[in-house]
Length: 183
Image (tube, rainbow, N blue to C red; front, side, top):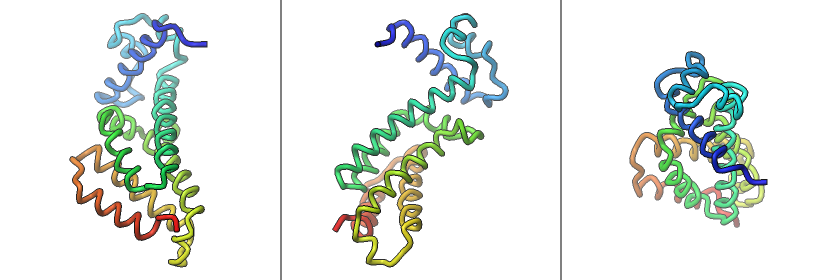
């Protein structure tokens, strides 16, 4: 069953309000009253949609994580890892401010960066395990997974804070060609 458009818009308003307010102060200092005031809604409206401020944050993280997981899964299925990471970095920069804000959460359970890392690790592991080329280096699988996952996260961080250049993409392509291409 589809949600009513008014419900969707209200939940989006509450989520956007929380993200904006998180740029100003920590989740501990924020109150539901602050969120309601910024969103210009009543507390009863807030509680009709969410249990508390952490419920809002958890749903935001889940939405971004699910989208990222789907994006990674689609990109990795094309067997072009460096192009996939480049495309993902460009997609992420479209929501740069929101993602940077959600990356800065001090809580593991409510941290988008940790969620992205776990998703990347899962997909890198599946991809590398099916690649026979990495075996020629006689390196532990966990090392290869960590190497490519940390490279992807470095690119994501860099893309959130800087302009990406073709040189960076060329280097990632080289890294991918050298160690990750399926034989």
